Image (cartoon, rainbow, N blue to C red; front, side):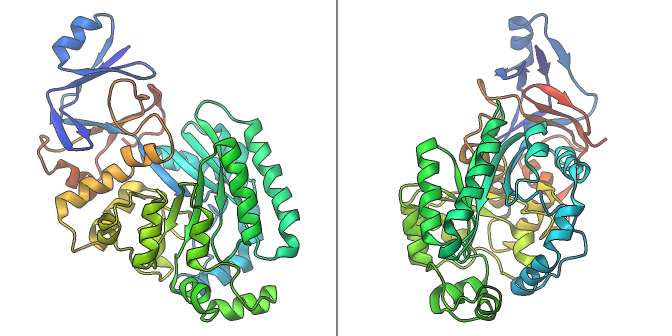
Length: 408
């Protein structure tokens, strides 16, 4: 048993002072230090001579590990130009990201305070690294393919990868299902994958309305995607439209990533389906896709999370950096409120969406926590300064176990 006595705790409602935390693998109690010392007289007491904050570990709900070798290879500025560069360099980038590359990426996320993540796996090359990660992992096996003639073969490959991840299931490693997007997956394939997810009670995720090109293709079979599909797949029409795609998920609440170009009617469908949106601000900016309307999500009562996406469309897997970018991207939102919402979007809300028993420091929750050294006494705007400043991480805990790699 350990007791940490920080200067303050970060809660979903803001900063709380005067409370300490007793924990082993889970949080046993949150109470004043004197009370915890009476209740747990043999516990190790940790304190610091400078102001500190104890907060939940960060949950990165959407990351692609397989492209982690990319730094400057892929082309930014336009979604379709980026996509062509992905196709051109896909094999070399995947080959370059061997096990050492994947392990370094996982370790970097840990060093940045990410104690859980949702990994979108297109090929399964990241499976062993994700299964061995110290973090909690939801491993989304992705299905992709818009040609009906290939549906059975693609489904068989998807099931093989899913079964391989099921074989590595452990506490903290949870296989799941990803549907790539409405423009890239045939409805017959979507239906089969979602039926399997429902049968096995697996979480599902999908990319949805990320780019203007996707919007034009799904609505009118026109735009930047037209030559892409004509030339590469000899396909002249979209296999789904935006509404029919959502209707396939009517009984499957799903993590819908990006959702930058959704209409009001589509937001109503997302709300009715109980779906959650994952916001990836850096990726959206680098690929020229614009900024999501958070106020519209909130008007519709749609929950949202913040994720980094992968290093194919980001320069770092750092949720503190991602939140800071979002804070400035959404310049019309009230500053302090948005800062707290962003912190919740990578802690309590993300953990709930990924069905993980973490994300807040409360009795019975897994002891996934970050202990930070502050350069000021805690005050009501400390959540804002968590996004603006880089505070040293004294320790990172996952299931109560101290993890090496903390920033000093």
